[in-house]
Image (cartoon, rainbow, N blue to C red; front, side):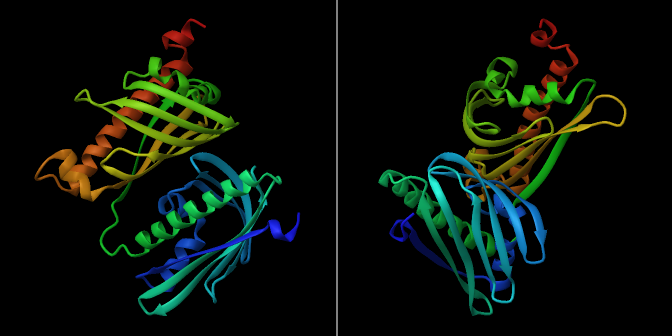
Length: 319
């Protein structure tokens, strides 16, 4: 690959927060789905000292991608460098560095540098990467600024619901994984569309019915791991939320059967509370509304998965 085919970019933003606080958000990759809109799921595969291998699942230009990167941490200089070990087409290779520069005790500048090349000589592929890097870099820096500058209580809430199933983990997983059937299996799902170009990496769009008869559309990216978990992040969320991530967790019980949990993490959109819930509604009312709605739908899905796995659901019982 000729050196001229390598592109280099730099994006930056000033953040009204101490440099150490900002560096911590960059350093802790497990929090990235809550901080950065493109990141669906992130995990540390291995770490030794200041070197770590991470795996990321994220959106780029509206599509879902996954890759692994090697990161090197430099806490003293507040830098984190990265290099993709296994890129996804059309990316041939990519690396870069996060740099946090203190401007004062309460302000800093964050610079995000990238270098990359395409997997082919097609100029369209390099243009695609240019757009993805520019869009994601701007989005990530703005989101980092927003998270770091939060001074009031964070509107992040986490809750879960669990059922026990006298059946196999595979059958439960199949029911949740095969979401293309949900419009005829679940009463609150009016329409569903499921795309899975990469095995185990899905884009799920649904029209969900609410108790008042209205319909809202959500779009999620799901990371599916047979037969243990499905992690997801909504990239199109209802008006009352700015963030919604979740996890379906399937765990073998010591005796027979499995335990199935639906876990949600949500951030309330405080600017739209009265618009959605009416005058006089507050954050506590919004939290309760969201929890009731999501838990209600989760329990409906969990009970249906239980019936399917135990053979008492009509479709499975007839098979």
